[in-house]
Length: 312
Image (tube, rainbow, N blue to C red):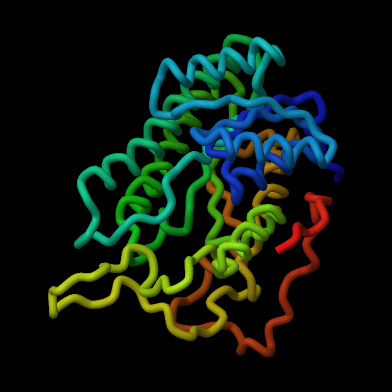
């Protein structure tokens, strides 16, 4: 089976240098033309450059996903250039945040707004464009393991990712009469593999997961609190291999799976959540299947980015 997205047009929101860029690149490598959305011009430029140096075709679709007129504007721009949109990937979200004892009203509101309104507005206007043109398209909303299970220090993120999961089921029912499929995709803490991002983090002295030097306590940890009763937000000490396959994978793994979900081979798949997490969600919380030295790991990664490693 050879997956092909030749002749298809995709729009990816929140195409930052990690998951969004990885998905955009994958859709391009499988043959789609890709419109790249973000509020950051730097992120858009980097994602487009990555696609183009790997032989693909891309365009910018800048703007705030929470503003309806902005969304209508960049959707119109994509339609004006390429005539249709076959694929929408709703990836825009604010990562991280704080725990329920520390999150601010504004932080919670903004995080939920970006995910909720961004997912809704893009689905609405891209869905309308598909229905109007008779495009039997695919819409994928990126969820998270935090949308299905509890994790300390990210209450707003967990709230809006949980909302994404049921929005998908409702939207799948609304759009099924038009032959438009809507699904969610759940990764869990992927290991970054964008050469540019890894080089930037190395120059800044960050860890492979992007933590700055001296960062402790996990996402949302209290900083400088003088409340003696406080406990740390999340345990960050040594741990057994939490993932049965020994790795959470990379944005490239996510890209392969999303590309397949958007292909014609998945024509009857709608209203579901596709999980790519190395078996993490399936695992009994109290046990790991084997010790670190006994986990064989998955097959080698099928690489999409042919860029040599950057200095640093």
